[in-house]
Length: 175
Image 1 (cartoon, rainbow, N blue to C red):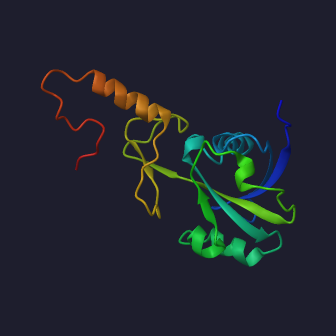
Image 2: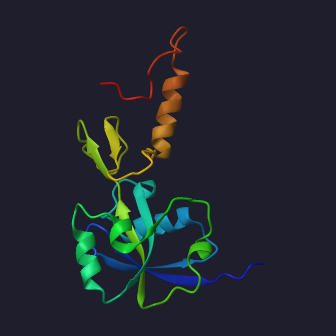
Image 3: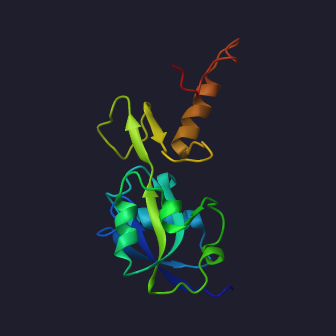
């Protein structure tokens, strides 16, 4: 049986890096998707739209470097240019591949939530409601993050297509 080794990661929330500091203790053999889930559970109320809406940036910032944290707090700041950080995208990579004996005097992760905007706001912000779309400013590759509920809803719509509806624009926003 593989040895279970817990590591502690120092994290800051991009939108509030000075007061939004927290630590996550997690097994280095867990996956990045498990880390996202642990962050969401640790920061209830901060990330309302699921662990898939959380972006992770691998950084190496001294704990006392308030100037960098103040730059991050600026809404227009770009995490990569301010911190030199690298975005962690792969959910099925082991945490230990990114964090080998993390220095307790450093910030290891900048955590950024994808903002959700709605045409018609829902009564429950925790739900995935038709009309909500990911707003991912600064997404260099223009990819769209989808939740499992988005995919399930899309598949249901596809199943309900009638004969001759194959060319429908189901699943795509049209102006």
